[in-house]
Image (cartoon, rainbow, N blue to C red; front, side):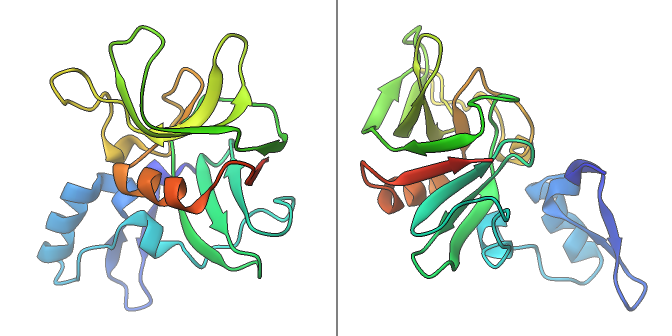
Length: 181
């Protein structure tokens, strides 16, 4: 079952709706109606979620294309951050990559979209593939919402919330291993 359709029943029999189910804004409203605390951001909720077993070793970034999720993994194997992303199905192919360049601000191939915190790690057919914040138009509007992260939405790169993109930017220097599973 996709995360966007997940509804959980608590041990006490109460209905729990995740942010992925109804979107963060609606999750805050629902939590208030049910007398619950609003859900924390996805990176805080899932930092203890282990990366896939085939996600390599050492300090690294792990990207599961099929799960549309990223893990920032420390040398000791602890996950410092994990969160939903939006990439393109099957891109890049599973394998071991390395960060080869970074740009604090970049532009889409057409030049019409701003890409913040670009961390390039693979080569596509014509352009590099990297992690970056959700692209924004010239007027500052994002081309997708954070609630849509976790869905295939990209032409090739891996979109992240701005906060998660900044965290990956700080975590991954040039040369950092990136494992795509």
